[in-house]
Amino acid sequence: MMSTTRKLALAGGIFYLLTFAFSLPTLGMKAPLDDPAFVLGAGDDTGVVWAALFDFLTGVTGIGTAVALYPVARRVSRTRSLGFVTSRVVEAGILDGDYVVVQRQQTARDGEIVVALAGEDEAADEATVKRFFREKGRVRLQPENSAMEPLYPEHVSVLGKVVAGDADAGFVYVTDAAAAGDDVQAIELPAQPLVEYPIAVVTESENAEAAEAFVELVLSEEGRRALQEAGFGVP
Image (cartoon, rainbow, N blue to C red):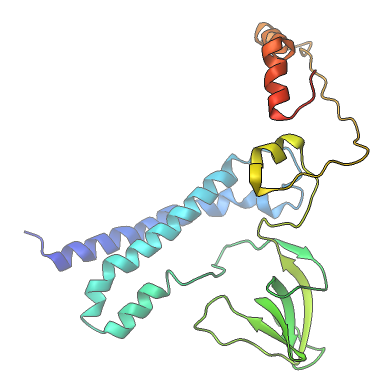
């Protein structure tokens, strides 16, 4: 019969192998992100979606590896075993292969995560990603990991702000604002441009009957009511 230690070691090994099984395929899946036009383009994003899922699973299996091996490593050194676990679940960080989306700007507000050149003078060429704060006539660059000390460089040159999906304001579709509910506040513009969406059956359609049925559905009372409820104008 397999001992508890052996079972834990086996579980840790399986989790460890799964981290590679989930992480290696994402290298190819993330290739479209190297194209700056990817976000604005109309290309297939299936691979990127799978890469995001695999990245999540890589994180889960990494934590699983640490948790499974903790009881085994604790027998050698309790301190080092705790360090092994917490290094895999600590706050936030940028891992090898991760992408950081940066909005280019030379200023920052307190609390924003920035990419900056930091050093003793203007010749500083070492870039770092830290949370930005102004305090008592100096700049503090704070790591997300609370175990690390903040930086107080003599010279800081902000290159950009790390974008994390947050925004103070922006132009979106009425339907997106409606779907967001109370998470956003929609403000109607005094003069709204008219955006038209033509609908018709493509001349050389391979599924002309289905296309015609879809057009009829959209223009029907049921279709008009559904569009109006979603925030669209009535066709």
